[in-house]
Figure 1 (tube, rainbow, N blue to C red):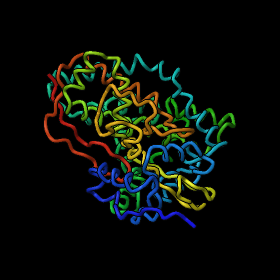
Figure 2 (cartoon, rainbow, N blue to C red):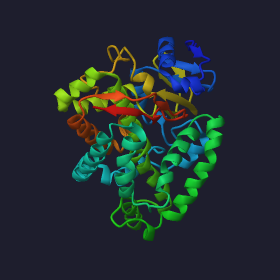
Figure 3 (cartoon, rainbow, N blue to C red):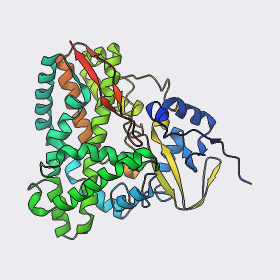
Figure 4 (cartoon, one colour):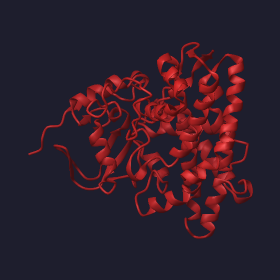
Length: 391
């Protein structure tokens, strides 16, 4: 006889929930490690140990059927590093990850650091600036998009496209439907621009072309694998940077701690992504009847993994709603876990480290300069605008 599973009528994709989901996550964690969500018609994993266990078992909790709620987007993700299992996943991850290894990213350090220093110098001289559109956007849009190798024309639309993909990844609500034309626009752009003669020589896109020439990947997989670069290069890093700047601007003691000990910057980045990950969830497809704790999950069903809820689980982290740059949560789930751990994590850390280091060296006080504006998005929890003042 099956153990009764708690259910909830919480709608995680209502506007109010997307604006402040953390109290709802707390309710779900207290209800149980696995909760049936009436609004979505699926189970959700709410606690750290359960989410981590699912991510450690990719044979049972598969990504090959996609990793989001929208089956249309899951179909488009097929063959990407996010939307595949081994052996395809391992092959594609190795090829896509060549320019994202720790050694490869270290070669970018001087250029990224110099660019961060330059933009921070300019913004500090202004005294007030937007922490998202003037700072967090800068490195991904001015440097990293060039590494990908796509032509200049269309780059300004990449953030719109990324936001659209994230909206369409969720349930089929009004936000997802409004995003559909942007996704079509992106598809047309990629189909037209991902051509050998249009990609910058030596760029990441050109490396994929070379891999196809050697027979390592199928040529038709290049567009979907190119999309694997755009996530870590753009939306998630921008969002994580903005979220962290918001936390630091609201707590002078945390900023003072970084100024007193710059070695804490690495820990602050980890803590920022733990407490405010830009992506709150992914899904997995259950490939066989299995038990998670005392809950039985049927094969050929989808389960929602609430990474952001797991990262605030007090069974794992003491006082989890408190931001503390000294916490150093190396095992948080904000960048995923297991074989699908974030492919661009080293690049993201380099960009965030460069920005924070440049700011800490020049700014005694980082303060809010107005009310921030949060994006209401099905798949991203990030700021659209973040007014900041520096002294």
